[in-house]
Amino acid sequence: MSTETRPESLKSAGTQPAPDDGDLERTLELLAQSDLADAPASQIVEAVRSMVGHVDFPCLGAKSVFRRGSLEHVVLDDMTGAEVPDVLLERLTAFARGIEGEDGFHSFIVSFRGPVPADEASFEAALFALLQRLHDADDEAWAPGVGSDPNDPHFAFSVGGTAYFIVGLHPAASRVARRAPLPTLVFNPHEQFELLREEGRFDGMRSAIRRRDEELQGSLNPMVADHGETTEALQYSGRAHGFDWEPPLEVREEVNSLVDGGVDGEAHHQPDGGGPLGCPRHDLKVT
Image 1 (cartoon, rainbow, N blue to C red):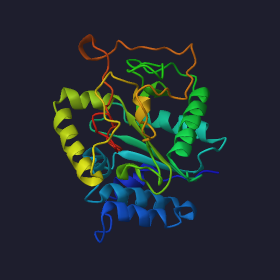
Image 2: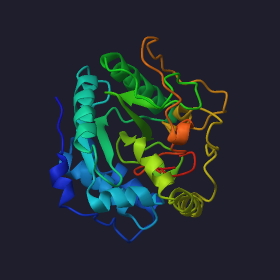
Image 3: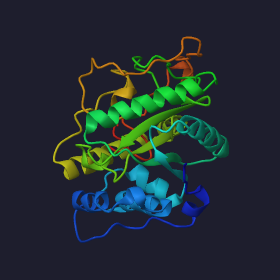
Image 4: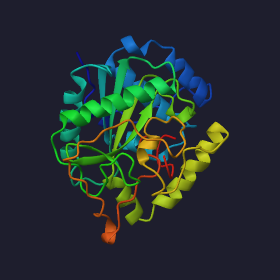
């Protein structure tokens, strides 16, 4: 069985700040200890909102998404549940259709009550197992303008014909900004990164987020890399890998793979580290 919080309830709620009596790391520890697996969906949504609303949270794009209410947050019971791929396929397809033609950033978030991973390796395995099942359930052509080979530097995950950059969050993450109280995936539409570049706002926001993340963590994200060097799937789980790592994801050979649909005839840019919620490679993500 699954539960969910619909986007309408978020659009009127506004960003609620996290408690100001501790730093972000301590706030996340308290949230992780609050038995959220058995809590109402609204409490889980509020916990993620508190994380992003904390003054130390580095991703400015995520803060903007929550402030504007331009997100949908779904809460499901079990990340390994048999019904999860069909539910996500339906909801992500509807999400993409609903934001078509809208300005600004949007994120689709799904939090799972369990299983709560013991470490980064188990979360990464669960994430890619779910992405594989989601792809297997999807009969739409691959999104245009991005690669379908998970090892391609221009790869992006496609759901229902829309390309997404995915940010994985969980309690055992080594990076503080990836340390959500429950396993959570953020789907950020690729198109909005292109818009950010076209408007000339990408470089400034990237620099600000990198600076904030380094101040929070005490070091730069080791997974930061320039566009085109490696597949963005390297960043989905937040676990550190060498750039020769290969994503455990098999894409059907018959899907359409278009890598030549970028701006002015150039290939599409990767979001370089995430997007509005979860700001990766150029650090517009949860790092």
